[in-house]
Image (cartoon, rainbow, N blue to C red; front, side, top):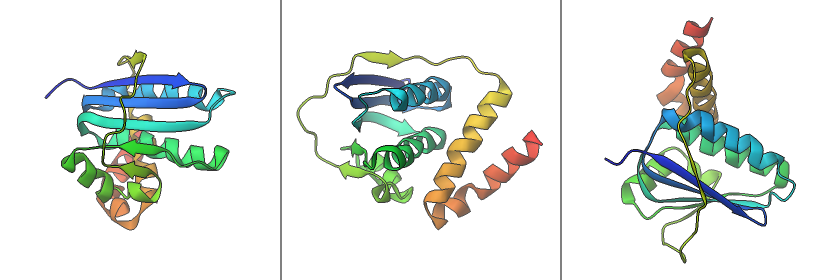
Length: 162
């Protein structure tokens, strides 16, 4: 499996986030920083996730994706788009309840261009736990199935942080 990368680009407030390979926790700090900067941009207008080259996406990354959708709805009343042509990734998105907070396209539109690749950044264990906890709480709030799947993990993380 190819090491995960997250490529990002923006043009006139349209942000494209392309995930490639096996996207994991190691990218979550950079991704979370990008999210903050994106929502602070004056021209922020829409978000497109290109998952056509994603092989796997961990639950922490899915939680950050859900965070983007929730913030986009709250701040701009917009619903991000996900483009995914992989049956496996599409099943994952469906299982997580993403069709309730994203518009999901299963066919590839014209090529999307990306300009910047987010790099994995170092983080201490405490920061990593906080990011994992935040992402999984967001997933739990999406639907009852996610609540059941992630409640033990969230409780364990909360107990270890106390």
